[in-house]
Image 1 (cartoon, helix red, strand yellow):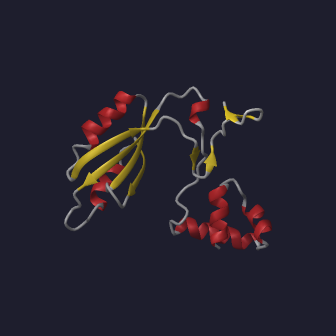
Image 2 (cartoon, helix red, strand yellow):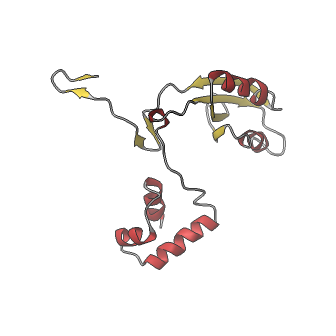
Image 3 (cartoon, rainbow, N blue to C red):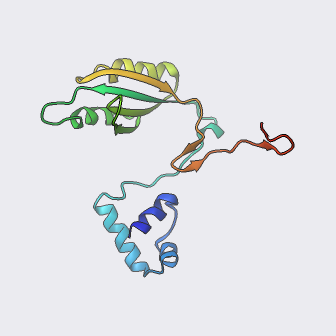
Amino acid sequence: MNRILKMLEEDARLTPAQIAIMTQTDEGDIKKAIAEYEKDGVIVGYQALIDWDKTDREYVSAVIELKVQPEQEHGFDAVAEKIYRYPEVQSLMLMSGAYDLQVIIEGKTLREVAHFVAAKLSTIDGVISTATHFVLRKYKDHGVIYEAPEVDERSNLII
């Protein structure tokens, strides 16, 4: 049934009937599997991937690296819970390597993002340091290429 999950990950608009045809499975079995995945928290949500740069919405995205002192009994989880509750936080991941947590946030302006980091993130107990990287352009997200550059076939130059 992992095939169902992969299909929904690639296109959440697929109906159980379509998945049943594609997997040669009974539609009732597909509906039951999806309901079970949702109940068990395997499927945690559905959403559209939007290229906001093609709209009039003004926003800034930033990737923030955090070095964190884990708590005695809860490790990184307690600090992570404080962070993911902020509405500005789009993603939060525990990482291996040079830093511990990666936070992706959105704000209306660079100043708003900077204020969030300075006033909210950096003041959380256990946060040792932050490094903020502003997203300038998305080329690919969740496996989807946003817009491939045009190639001038005469010279093979990207325009």
